[in-house]
Length: 219
Image (cartoon, rainbow, N blue to C red; front, side, top):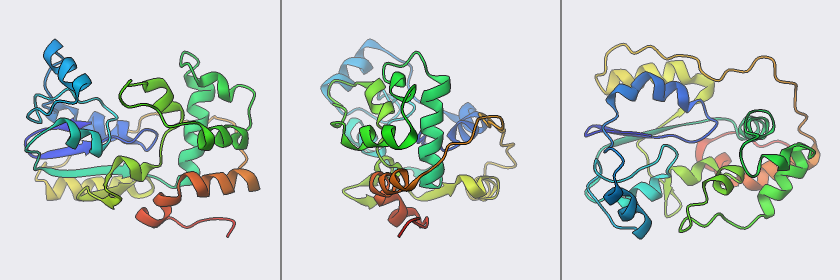
């Protein structure tokens, strides 16, 4: 996440958002961590946006729940739901052995993991179970909607990120900003999306297809 008095970047995990964060992180004016901010977050108390305790992958709904008077341009990056599901699975499988739920991918196929992801109970935001929340990520649209309606001003797509980011910087008068390539894995073994995995992705990411205009498979 990046927040200042001009814009808010909602960082959806596994969408290429690290590249955007690296390019614009010098503009992040979120308040420093403090005991008061931590307590206010736990109690759900609303604070001025730049003083609220906001985490890097907070949803827009969480930002609005914890802040008052937020009125800035907002944007996020999304990607094809099938690619997102595979990237999330690979990330847990090969890069996050320290996470509590990474073991779920060690012996499970993509379809088996997606079945757990679809059936597991929602993470309790009151208890702030970050590991469970990351393991069973909601759809991408859950990060950028309020009451079921897309509520950020602009959506950038990973598939056209360089062009979309350049246009964004022009519109925000940020000047030319280099966009680094981060977490690009060209050596990861392929992950097969079989018929069951396709159906589960269609289920988990149902709102993403409708909200962001990505085509469904297997229909």
